[in-house]
Image (cartoon, rainbow, N blue to C red; front, side, top):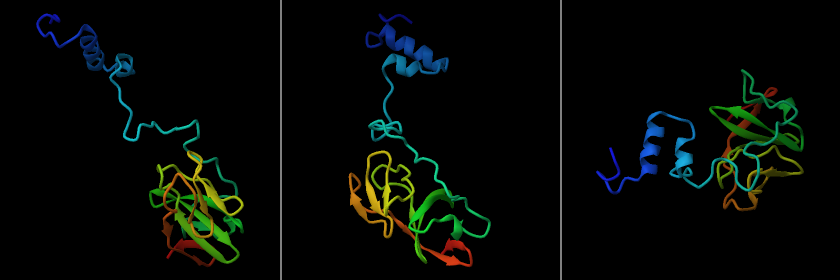
Length: 158
């Protein structure tokens, strides 16, 4: 097909179509037709990491519950995998709380609490470790609480 048969079809568009048809990786980006996903980001914005650093002190779910109480440091917390997502489990004395670890701003997994604050590594939103409340944006609301209780030496769903 020549470009004279379809005046709206450029040589570049045709070559891009051939690249797509051949499934050449990066073919769309080279043609300048690729678009960003909704929100305009591919996971990193402002140079920040998309995942928090690995937490210490465990945080691995056990067969009996979400996490062993001994793995949640008093005055701190851990990030754990649970029910297809991640939770921030915090502990102050005998009080244990859990929150959805997805930052309400952009869905990035927040970090484990430090000094009473849970921080999102992507844009810097901060939340209170004791109640998940918003301390600093760009998030506009706090973390979503997840009901838990202590049963024996395990933190379990309430």
